[in-house]
View 1: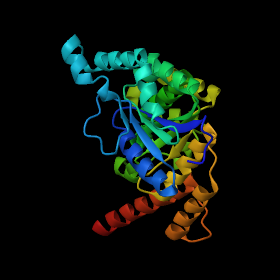
View 2 (view 1 turned 90 degrees about the vertical axis):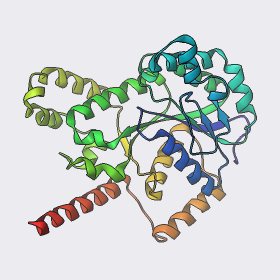
View 3 (view 1 turned 30 degrees about the vertical axis):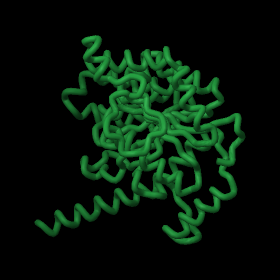
View 4 (view 1 turned 90 degrees about the horizontal axis):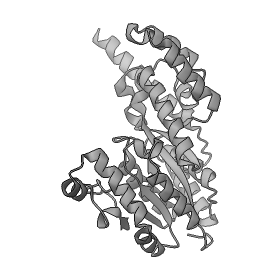
Length: 309
């Protein structure tokens, strides 16, 4: 991969269930392979079945959620916590598996249970041990973009993202996934950059206050917004896995966070790929690009509705 043998770079892909982690790993594996990186995907989710990507290391060889639930009579949440504690207790197994792939770039597909990244320490300790094994990792935290359409859900997502950033203690990139589907959830109250840059949340609070149910929680929402803005850590990169421009923007943010440097060959491959896609003098601003596509789709929808009338 053109990297120092002592260092191994990669991403730990985290986020709530259904946020698109496995799809992201599959898409990023294919994308990086086209750039010339040797990519290894590590499935860290003992509940993952029917993986759509080629998996070099699979934690289900060590422990599976179904076996734990059946053997210990635990529910899915308790079972998953036990699985990660079991993996933490058997890190020598993981180390042996990873040593077989020293010269590669790693994608760790992690479980979706939120408590693992906000309260419980097993996953955090596993990431810490990976750092001691000379892994330089970025946490890629995926959040479904449909939360932008609901101010209350968006504030809760901001709180979860902030809590995860503080607990996991890794270089962090928050990603709004499934941007190609965002127009299906209704018109956004503000421009997309309001959500990606997490601008003045007082506007969002005013929007919430218009709802009779949330009006009585105005003071609580105000304090939550103050916590988020006082830390001033959370921002998002928009992502459509099927869009090369969007994938490059996310990859650049990730590589900047973990210190990965492009090799000459990889840089040339990247330029060739984008030149073929959009022309030689390609320049791309992620938020602006996605915003233009969103506005364009919305305009078409309005136009169609007018024609129906």
